[in-house]
Length: 321
Image 1 (spheres, one colour):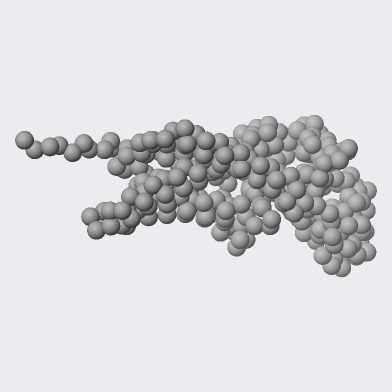
Image 2 (cartoon, rainbow, N blue to C red):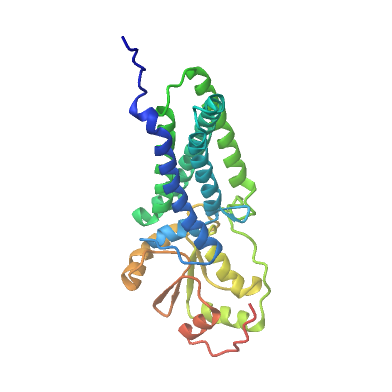
């Protein structure tokens, strides 16, 4: 009578391929975001709120696109999943077994870290963007990445028969704690000043480093005199770019409306009230920066020449920034 070998469940036999497939989708997602960030392309977003999330300071770590770290993480997960499959079990059984054991722990640690980090980013997205701008504040690329991270974690848990679940639980707790501490450390002070520097009056963005010339100051005074307003948020890098065009002295003269609820001198209620008018006039979701000049709304960072033309400015135009 022939003995029958017990066949492994379908999930266990295909789990590494499934993990590699999900990691591949995540890599494509983050590769696209990385490429547009590094090479100055325009990310295709269904809403302006999505663009605001991707251009916020949360999308960078130490000046490097966060998507690049995500890309490396997904590629690593794919490599861990596929590495043992390249070893012939008939010729190198021990090596194949060792690789499978090592890479399963790496897959579990990696998927746990990615899930915890994605959960934090989802909290930021919903509390900072969706809470203020509704569905327009959803970053669909970020949401997709979080789903991929969750799928990797579930596939890793179900992909093999874990013998020591106590050790697995302990390892997961340690990895989760390290990820949380590291994440909070990066975003609380190590992100180059792009995030909030909290004080009594509220959070402020990075300092303006450029110097204003006579033309910039004259234009800023003119915009203020005619009642022009700039709507922005302290965490918005495009708002910082706009102020950099004016320079430190001139930027202090323009009428700036802080829309972030936790920003310094926040006027979030004013921004929420004007948001429907901006969408009706421009056909776009309220994004930062947005200028209100002579009854018109100009969305996005504007050149000083464009602001001068829109406002009827007749002064000198030797803009240096």
